[in-house]
Structure formats: structure tokens, C-alpha cells
Image 1: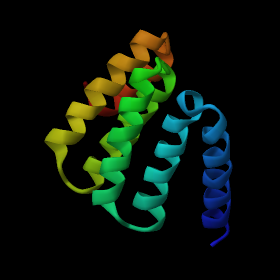
Image 2: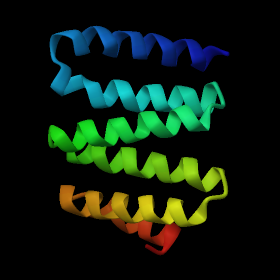
Image 3: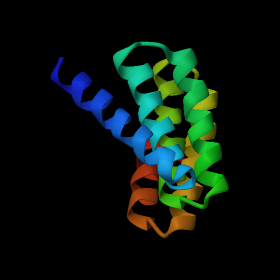
Image 4: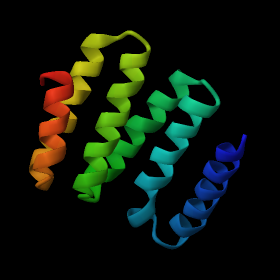
Length: 116
């Protein structure tokens, strides 16, 4: 699969960059790792842990746009696993993070999709 190679190479690059500037790249590395686990390796449990770590890292270092994205991607994981209550919780958090970041169009789009 072509995209698996691209994703794995990207994760390897982020890991290198993370060794020089952990605060700037850890959340990106963790988010891509979560995507790989969920979409390519079909491991929702590990992906959930990685998404949570990406969220914590983005929060800690004030990366608001990536925080919003991590919340949204986590919501999609729960939505696909038929845990609608948890999905809505994360969609709410994503919506608020997009608003806080100033991404009004994205926040509106998310609201239209989810109603939260």
C-alpha cells in the first residue's frame, strides 16, 4: 500500500525532528502514530492511547489548531467504533478548540456535521 509507506516515512521524519525539539514535534508524531495504528494497523485501542497523548502534548505546548484536529480525529475513532456518546464528547471538545483557535469556518462545518 503506497500510503502506508508515506505515513511510516513521515512518522520516521517526525521522530528525528522530535529528538531536536520535542515540544514542537511530539504532538505531531503522536497524532500521526495514532492515525497509523487506527487506519493502517486496525488497532483502535492503541490508537486511542496515542490520540490522548497527542492531545495532552498539544495542550501542554499550546498548539491550538493541532489540539482541535486531535480531538476531531479521536471523535472519528469513537464514531467508527459505534461509541456515539464518546464521539460527541470529543466533537464538542474539537468544536470549542477550533473556536478558541479562531477557526470559525471549521467550527461551523463541524457543528453542521455533528450538531454539537
